[in-house]
Length: 279
Ligand code: F3S
Image (cartoon, rainbow, N blue to C red; front, side):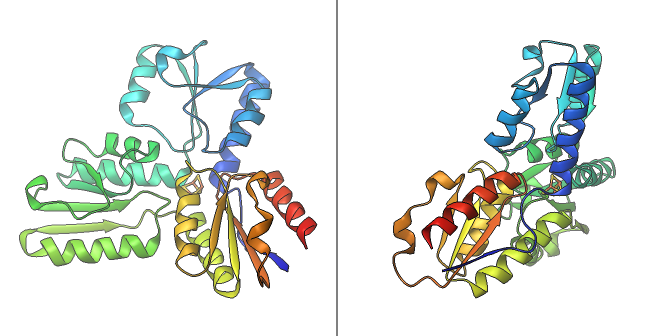
């Protein structure tokens, strides 16, 4: 059995940046709280907790007047409320998410209905909807025209699959173009997501099995699982403990490894070390 890592794997620039900012702030200011987990990965959250960084679910739960906004960002309402309460803000919103927020805000301000292609319960999408105004909606299915105004702007959750976004836009045009006076599409899928997905797919096509390492609540990890599963037998694991030796009992030549953008290097290294022990 051979083992190969995808050429783009693990922490993206946005996650690395957010963790560095929070660690620096915790070093300078003492114990801090993030609004929701800083990234969707328990190992990262646990490691930050050792440095005094814990998670608050709402502004009411803040123990000190300092708030860390995670890489997923928040809506403007949360910022306004925090500022009104005199809370100091450390904003680690990923620049790619910020770009999507700005696009949503500009479209809404110009009178467009903003359609966000994504999971409406995901924190990033909730934040985007905050900028998308009253006519904003998040969906993965083409919405009915009665929910839209004649001018529509479409953008994507940053971690969606590009091909899925492309299909959504095509289907939207096919269904509604005749009724619209204007349609704008902003490709807000982040560069790291695109590179991760391309590298995972390239490896999956050459592998007999793929292991995708990352949290089950991580959107970009789930996309990698979907993508690889379309090509080859794929297992989604959070840590090396979930590896079952029986997966490798048949003829498995090449095992490909990829990992979500919030999966730390140590977790990936441990998976490789367990696989090496099974060879
Ligand atoms: Fe940012 Fe993309 Fe990572 S949106 S947090 S660089 S997956």
